Image (tube, rainbow, N blue to C red; front, side, top):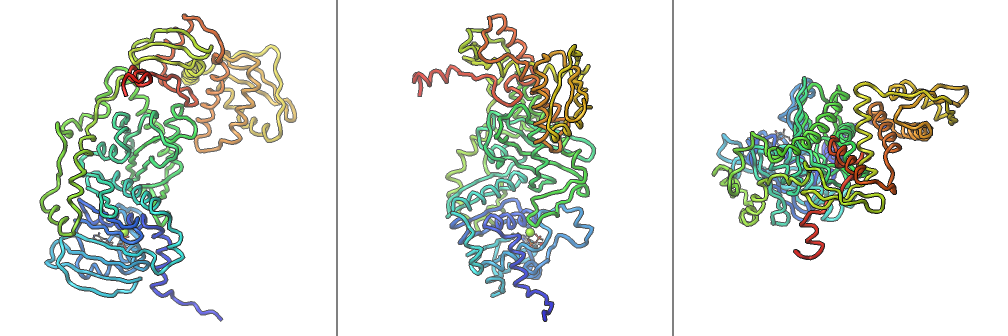
Length: 593
Ligand code: ADP
Ligand code: MG
């Protein structure tokens, strides 16, 4: 016979730890989020052996009284939610009251804390979930949590930890994400006593974003701004000349909380559409502010997932805002206003002439020393980073306002030209594809596609699956000027085609359209699908490689290209031109090194 028993508390804490505490970086994340919730303005994270032997997080937040400190290590003890209704309007980072007891159940745990209005602090020591010692201590206002020998009593879990390098990079990533969400807080990460990451406090996101994404992005960022009913978007996206092979540099925040949402990522890709190579990921920091009751953040224990009640609207706004930011930046750029771009007006007073200095109050420094932070190393390394934060104007060479001078054609495929930026190589097929694609798109959006009726209709034989797909596509096809009718069974006849497409090209295009629809069934299928059709048509229509062109033809191609919204990438995202600047050439010939 089995008896139902309430789980012993230690066991249930360890089970919860399985959800909350996966690896050192999850401990860091929970502790740092607690410090943020406590109103800290400076947070220091110290780790030894990638957090496996020590994680210490100290803050200058409001601290806890002795009673509250004792409560904080009880399961479901939280100062942050009192009613079920509160679950629906969560504004703090943590809210489950599980982190501290969970972490304490799988480590040698020490909490030292002092509340503002108290003279003495409290020290609590817990070993594998059992309270060993509670005492009064002298301490600065704020809280320090020390986690030693993580998983010492759960060896199975310890075995799953990865190499030091991997664990440190998880920790760095976790801190980078949180730091982006809180530019006004100073964060420092020390690994084995030396400064690993330093994020000075700042009034604006820009320097923090540059600090996290890398200094090379400072000239390549454009601001995302959108404000609609119940939805505000802000942040930066980086021009696609800098990309990554993974999505690790896409940071999404919903109400300041770092989240992961496939729909949002897909919306961002949609915004970058036609600008990115396949398999590449952009660098983006995006903040979504939305009423607390329009989003559910309590979906997953580690709180990375969200559910929007009106997701389609949010995705649509994200897609448009990113697209707008990227195309606008280009337009402004060609008018020579790019310098303003990365230094928005409200920032003008923010960047000092010289390097910035610490902006912390003396009180904070005092507190910091009292926790025994390794201050010296920080000051040794800090200034170099500060200076590199000051942005320089965008290079004018990204955009070419003057028409390039044609020098010739090479390999029947590339146009060779000279412009202010240097020597240009232009892929004629990619360029023409872009021109035709934008022309088609304009037509589709304004007057609709003109179509021509075929004198001799063409037939199309399909498989069952394909004919099913095509039946569903028929109404959309007609908006593209393509008229297709069922002809019994799985046979169809093509009655008319867009006037710019030759009759012969239509059947292969249709087959490709059907194949694309077979694989591509995501949220944006309709818009995306139409776009895909335009790309296909543009590709079939565009001049091929290995086609001789005369100077006049090349000139007219480049003129048309300059008029395009995005003259830098073909609709598939491949670059249209490669520029070799004077500097590049001098380097190639070793005139300079
Ligand atoms: P939660 O964050 O979900 O409330 P935790 O277990 O992480 O749960 O923390 C429990 C409680 O301990 C918090 O609600 C908060 O009151 C207190 N606490 C934890 N860390 C700190 C800190 N750094 N400063 C002040 N209070 C803290
Ligand atoms: Mg918490």
